[in-house]
Length: 345
Image (cartoon, rainbow, N blue to C red; front, side):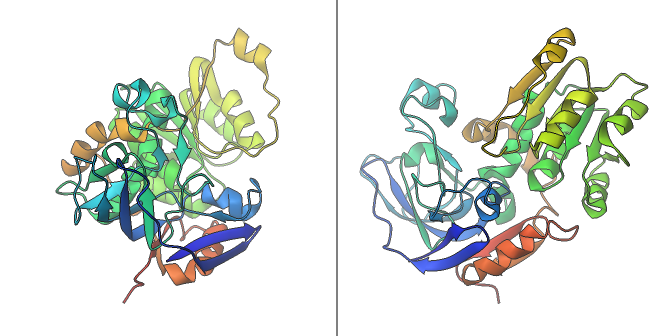
């Protein structure tokens, strides 16, 4: 089969690898029909996380080709989405909390070395009853892809930032996850969602969803917009040192910061004393993907949250190098791209 492999900074190729095999009696093999490049994939591409070579991708929808004897929730031929983060599916963390991060065997991410990459023709999926969900009625392929990671992360980002009706929220970074966080905060009843991003066109996309764009230095703009009080909740969808600084400077006393962006491998100098004096809550969240589905699926089906306009470009799998280069421009018009093994007519 073909799979996209990053072998060094800015080095992407589509390679031939052995076809995936059934990963045990509780596993499945999925033929990938559509995958996507995530902002976290770009950390391999940019060299922030130098794990090479790595078969990349953790967002996929497709068709079940094979299932193990213990699988009961999906069958061969079903159209499914694959959760980006995998757990064993059997422990308390997986079964009770529906959160692979709490898996007693340790969470694993597709396309990060331990499991195969989803930017491929096919994918071996362990714990299929836990990892896979039949795509529900009213959910198109792009919405399903967002449910594998980005929308679930934006939703968890807003909920764990303590967004409540009437609150003022700041979202820093308006890639796909940041845009999903904006829409999630609004769906949770935020009165105002302020947004910060250096790319004007991305701010315009957020404004089209109901956000308020900030101009100039972020913390100064937030304080000006809130009468000096600060935002009730801050969602950092970037997690660079500069955006973390902005988050701490922009949150009100007693407010909450939730970091959902992926930092590099270097330590961040955290101002603990100031956080203590101001009673700031700091959370860092890898989304419990599976636990978000019961809330998000009905919201999408009923029109309570918009999933359109996040994907902007579409590439064939064979053109993965061009797709990554397009995302790396971080332009106003290219926010998120899909990769399709069969190509696009």
